[in-house]
Image (cartoon, rainbow, N blue to C red; front, side, top):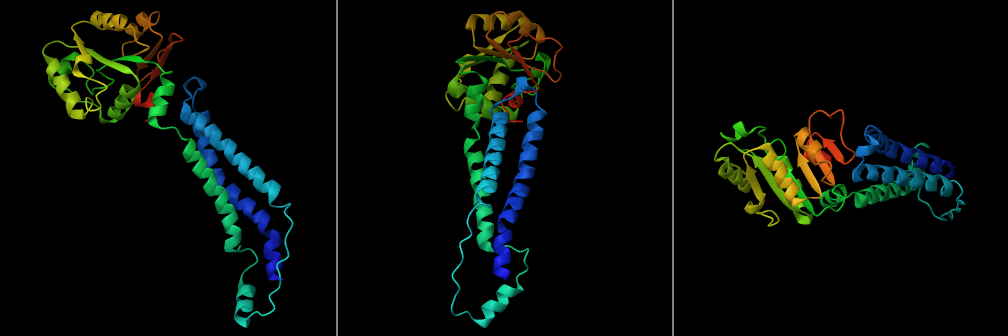
Length: 277
């Protein structure tokens, strides 16, 4: 009798356990998804939608197949020891057997394996966000370096550690040029900082592609001459001037500007734009 009661209630229990396991994960994905503007959706947000769809499919399959499955009558054992009979009788009706747990666990494990499999790598995200662009120009101050003014570069140059991995991925698929305005012989200091951080180790970026000038107009001229698919800057005036000539731009700014051209994207950091922060 105990065995019959446990097997008859197991489909419902499996569905309840499955929904409880998935509800927390889906709730987290959906909260992060709907808190992001549609314009800024990236491949990870798309992954959240795919994860939700997979969760719904597996839940539907569990509801559709489990309750309607014909219950096979288990053959009665002719000989059963007194110890096994008493152990089966001592199991509470609301406690499922290991066999029942395996059905739910298999569905949950398969869901998380698929979600992990479909999660894009950083390299894939970089290529997707850059729309398969082949040339990128980027300023150093406030984007690659901790310093935000040429005056600070007269004392030191510090590469932000969190940006190195993104730069290396960009150099794998794009021709990357870095540029900055300096006041004196800060070039050597900046190049040394980039080399120490390992930016030149991949071979995609060389020192000859790090350009220096003495004015903001000079940096704008560099960009116009190189004709990149993407330019990354912190100066809104330069972004506005280049909007007519450059296909896409990323303006790094702590506060989103009131007006931007349709081809100018904004982000608090280059890492955040590529989903690394």
